[in-house]
Length: 220
Image (tube, rainbow, N blue to C red):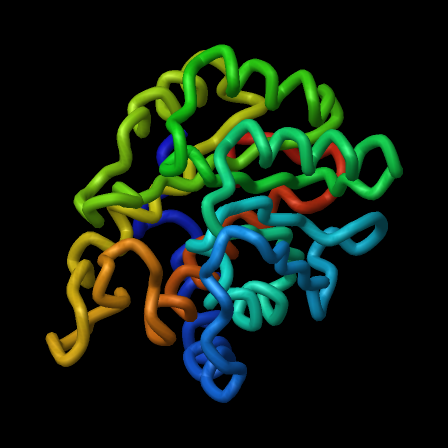
């Protein structure tokens, strides 16, 4: 299932107003490969249980304050690949800390095959929903990253367990660098800038109707 601009428009518009300046003043994060950045959601859209989590690479770092305000916890590290995201999810599940809704990117660093995504479903378990977030090419900034088609095939194969949040499609009209009008990206055209960080969180918040236990794709 591909989530585009028409889905959950009310949620997106409301959050955009509230999140537009959340990242300003927080300081630019360290995009290096060594440090793991963690953040807890400021609100819990799941009600009971744990707030949704985004497990990702350096794309998610600047949007951390915006994501937290939207109700999404974050575990991010620069250079993280998809396999490492699965390892993080496995550790959270082993500690009984894995929320019902799990979002992942990271395939821009090393790709993702059908086997990896099947492994992801096995790691999180049948009681959890998996959202896969599309990315730009981490090396060139060009859209989209290699293996993006694998994400959509997986969503078609597992329509009641996997959905795709197509950030590349959503942000394509703003895929530019300041001072270009409406630019959402840093000079590498991979990481969102502060404006893009707010848009990133607003877009991912479209998945929040699936935050509660027992809710699975497709989105209402």
